[in-house]
Image (cartoon, rainbow, N blue to C red; front, side, top):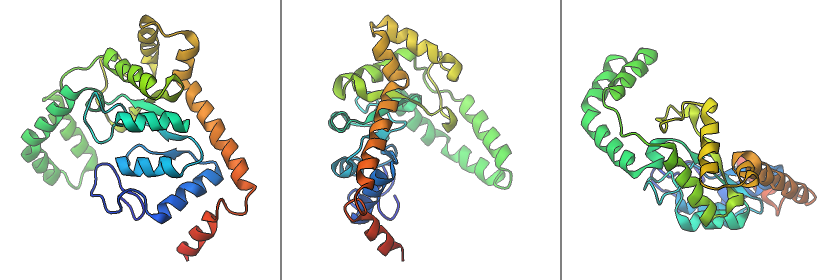
Length: 246
């Protein structure tokens, strides 16, 4: 949570976006910036969708119906993102994909807290060694395995609720996350394509999921920006932003 928007996994202080936060979204529209609603609270998502004239993006979030994590998106907001013209990019983190893994992760966190605290204290001046030791501890206490099929279940669900034009791949390979079996990195993305083909997806819909939907939404973000830039300041948002920054 910052000074103008509530985050999903922090204390809510603003009941979503502040008035200034709404002006930030308007200015993003004017500048041609994608409003990314991953990591924000449900109310912030709703406020962004209320304000934005351009499509929004959830760059690395999944469907909450399969894993009840606050980083995931509930069905009512998935539907609104589709109506907005936006795109939900599925996160590959198994904690976000599979409720079994999420609950096992919470249990592991509680069970290993004392050991992690001790490692943090022991190696607080050596971040590289600390990361290695924490990884060894996690490796010795693995989470349940999740398959590509579960990942594609999220794609299926978002396509049904938001629409086939509003789902993509967010991965989060650089987030240090545990990945589904069969996905080690970008080299394994064809395995997702295979599973989509196996489920009966056609070539055009697969191309949408693999990047076409993102490109379509981004083109609309840029189109909206051109319209907004013809105005003096995007409904006055620029003047308000400048005044509040002084």
